[in-house]
Amino acid sequence: MAASDAHPASVAGDLVIARPEGLYCPPGDFYIDPWRTVARAVITHAHSDHARVGHGHYLAHTDSEGTLRTRLGADINLQTLPYGEAIAHNGVRISLHPAGHVLGSAQVRLEHGGRVWVASGDYKTEPDGTCTPFEPVRCDTFITESTFGLPIYRWPTQAELFAEINDWWRRNADEGRASVLLCYAFGKAQRILHGVDPGIGPIVVHGAVEPLNAVYRAAGVALPPTFRVSDPEVNPQMLKRALVLAPPSAQGTPWIRRFGNYSDAFASGWMQLRGTRRRRGVDRGFVMSDHADWPGLQKAIAGTGAERVFVTHGSVAILVRWLTENGLEAQGFKTEYGDEDVADQGDAKPVAGPDAAALDPPVADAAS
Ligand SMILES: [Zn+2]
Ligand SMILES: [Zn+2]
Image (cartoon, protein in one colour):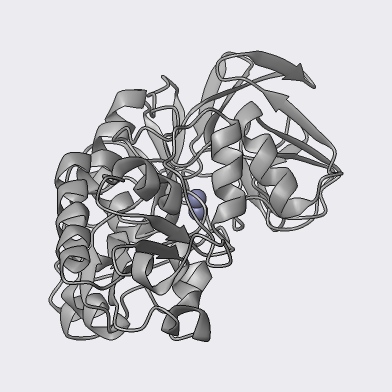
């Protein structure tokens, strides 16, 4: 056999290989979430590290159309597919399956010559009400992310998370100050809107958030009414009970300072680390992620039945080691995917420091 144990990647007949442009399907002659411009791209979801401008042709889930056209341009050459429906391209059968990450997020299933591969993009295993829940897809080879691939990452349930957020908001409202919650504008903001108790007070959103709310509402996702600061209903009195959603990049700007004596908080999976909360300088940190936590990654990978696993970004070395120890053939793919919170702000992610040093196993981050 040509495939040696030392180099399990690039076996002849692999349905996806790593190329400088991105993850490439040789028999199909197309890419999945490429980071360089290519002729044909299958896009798992519309976050900016996965969906880039300039490709000749895009294939994505039907519910990604609104976000892709909003972010990449109304005139992109886009073909859409509902979940579970297959098309054939150069003899490769392609279908999209729910990834539970953000609206329209999809795992890409490829079938060719008796082999089945699934590229998951980003995914989350707990349903959140704003997108179709993750579904495991049986395959021989699974390509997974590992953004939070460390045993310390275990998310609270949706119910626990929203009880915490509602309590914080209600207490601030009772004390007459706005609750400013910093969160990524696409996905996380809509999840917060969908999950909070709108009976506590009015909700005001930053200009970066509202266009995405519109896309979600158009797709049939129930979101409570939201105000822009420029709306006539918005006045100093109503702001004292308001929940304000803004992207992390708004922190410290005049836009935020208008809310006066407010309480602030940050919603991110990185908030699980005390050091990250401290460095953000916010009153509260809510542990909330659109990615799978450590148990979620394990459950998702086991659910595919795959014998071979490629890990694309995040704690690649840690997850590869864990998979190998559990009898799977695993290795990393070098990609240019990142994390939404980091892409927005640049410093939401933990760096080496007291908290990182306390981690066992140590952080080995291959993504950036
Ligand atoms: Zn994403
Ligand atoms: Zn990503």
